[in-house]
Image 1 (spheres, rainbow, N blue to C red):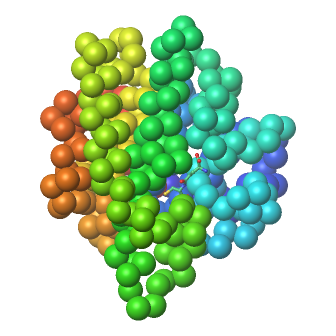
Image 2: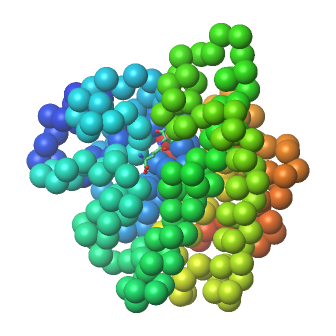
Length: 253
Ligand SMILES: N[C@@H](CCC(=O)N[C@@H](CS)C(=O)NCC(=O)O)C(=O)O
């Protein structure tokens, strides 16, 4: 994927939607957004963020340093997953990513928060991924930055696997109750896209579908039975169905 620098992207005001993405790796937040952009047929200019980097120019442009960010010309940068979702719905209402009826809509947003939000499934998994680096004698600067940004502490890490288990069991229940292939209705929505992409944080797709760098794969691949149990058979089948039907592979990042 060809990326603009943040400086180039700032100058492209008037050229439509820009998506700041972590360059070179399949970050689950960014991959979810890319999959939903593609699902809606929305074009965008990819802009490079450096995972764990200082991202000084991004900070000056958007007021924060993480990815993804969606910047649509005259609107404020959408840095938070819910703002991003609502922006996608606004830019291209069909196919919709959220149900309209209030009950289903509030549940769908809640499930997205459990997967992608603060303290959610991805957040907890990231704490566990950071743990080996945080235990080194000299903690690498990117890990130190990420630990600070995303609430790492010994106490937080201790509860992470159990919390992932609670969330994934709840997701499995919701998928079962939905009774079809998708979390809501008979077409894919935000919860489906988030789950499919975040499942890769414990068992990434094989190299031919997800050609992530060799150094990155072991970080994402878990061998801990408690964590692997989060990917129950129905949740893994859902993930595989989403890639087979709705997310283009091989992934490009
Ligand atoms: N601000 C986002 C969180 C996005 C996020 O967690 N981004 C991570 C993805 S791993 C990231 O950019 N990490 C690398 C970094 O912060 O440099 C939200 O709340 O929706």
